[in-house]
Image 1: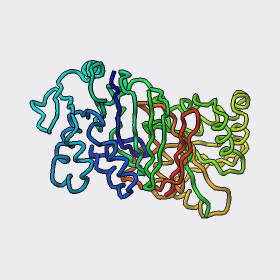
Image 2: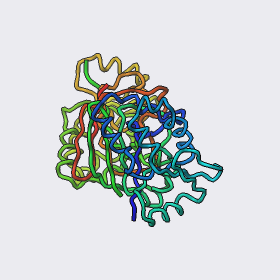
Image 3: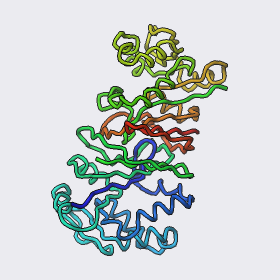
Image 4: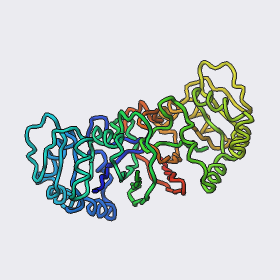
Length: 187
Length: 187
């Protein structure tokens, strides 16, 4: 059985997007070589199959395949573009990003099947509505959450709409000089 | 100038209360002697003047002065009951809890004056609406946030209504065997 992880930077108040549903707020805390190396290590091809909801996919495909991304964040861009990817969307007609499979089926049902098949481990990035559903269904094995030292006040939570609490097991913490603390939890 | 700290347990998704505006959800992760000792150390009398909004005060006064609290959590109860306390409320007529001062003035204006006066350091517990206002006004010097290994899905954020992000400086992290990670930030 392959594992399903969630990888999302969150603010001190628990949001993964800012008030405009953007993810870019979390990137301003770069500039720490050790942290960038850790992120690059995580994003390397072969590390997993990336899983997106429609909104996050749209943001990602507008940035990562561009020359701007290759210049600004070459290691991560190369890794993400090469990785196998899944996007969940009922309405999308075709996924144009390199190495991407479009799944129109219900995310929970599809994920149960995917996890049972052989293949690389699965990693959700962004995609709050997908995370909520998969978490509620008990399908997420691991959460890797870099906590950015910023309070956003407004934004989207990746656990929106959850109808009962989920207890997790702390699996590790790691702090970086830029003030980011990575919290890792397991089911 | 005395310092103003915020001390609040938060869920993995950033809430300090559950969906019913209760704080009790955070206490089920006791049972770790080292963590309980750390909490007791923090709550000891002389550690500060406790600051509450009306809602949190009502919850606190219904529990801490009772025989039940003295039996369940004697160290914290003794410390909290003895500590000097402030409650912000425009409508309350009288604060009946031992050693408590009622302030009817605007919390930001009152806190500016309090910080400029000599006296013990100030600690806000719970009180989301008070934290939001004081944080937005740049009056909070330190946040001590035990992150409980639970996703609540719904609850109240202590930064609700903040109209622009606040960048903080990570001052420390400490993990406990019960899975709680205490994140400390400074302004």
